Length: 446
Image 1 (cartoon, rainbow, N blue to C red):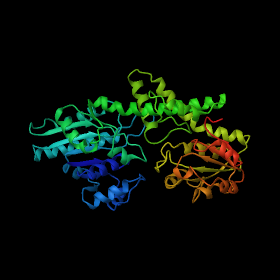
Image 2 (spheres, one colour):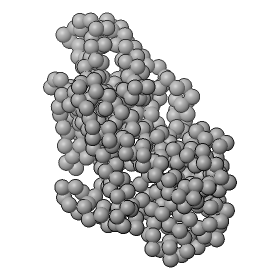
Image 3 (tube, one colour):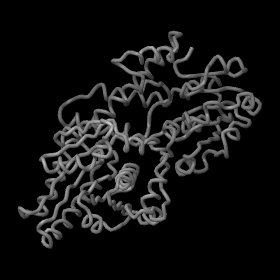
Image 4 (tube, rainbow, N blue to C red):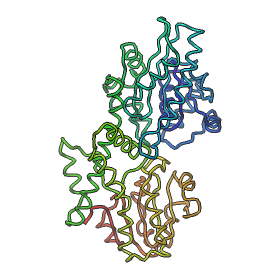
């Protein structure tokens, strides 16, 4: 199939590259000319394991191309995927201005194309996370601009939400748990089924529904997963007060088949581009329609509080005297295997430490270039994890990168001014560190 992907962020780039890798001809379009120039050379603007190999491979095979020309992308494709940013507005609602501006331009291009070719066939697919009813609005914009279309032409709008985890996005796309498709007619369903057939050969279902239900699926999934994490963070905080160990609690309830083990890890809170934005948008949708989503609101509030919890532990350990204390930070991105700093708990933690007069030295395997844009010269950045803790009064583990899991603890102790570890992801064994002479603080641990 001939496909265009409008927008080359995380979702757009993965979508375009993976569709090309299954044999489709894909054009990825973006208004950022500098980004497109680099992508044409195989230089990616993001870190995502495995993505650079797929991009280079399909560029070389001429199945994947990049352009800043929207008209070229629309004219040369049968399917047009909208992978555009929908950032939260001031009131928390999703800002759809970019999406609708692009749709208006696409509609104008389609109107010109229909005059030249009355047999034109185009399916516009919304892949961005958008409020319920957005596909209907896209359809309204397109058909009000085009007017009456010839009976020989086919133009329609579908919804196809993404479920890609940063750090595992390529695997998630190639081997999905399920594919959700929102359509309004059999022809669009047939096109989308054919497109996704290569990705569901292992038995994953293609779930077909109306566009509004498809749009709601994404918000519901993210809110539910965020709820699990926030719930366990509250249980962890109670465990500390009661002298229980949240790790033992987590493992035990995870064996219950009604619950399962995933997304039950307590820590310093969730971040990223999806959970915070989507929960705000869902709360706003509820308010607009007279539904007070109390649980969703609580999930968000608990998370904001959790980001500051570890700072309170640090303050308590140092009796509130953090002026001139050197605090080392391991991990800056909101999760491992990504350089994404959006809504990362590390931002809140570092800013709170700076307010208290501490100096901060941070290390992250891939996120430091993005972190430098946020903190500039307010903090120092180390060349490696051990350089970060040299002369430190405490270490705060924020992001559980694999290389942080089995460090040389004896070497760490020799480097640090005082051997104090605040384990924000519970990746270390308290007994082991205490036996080596460390002062250890976890989340919900005895």
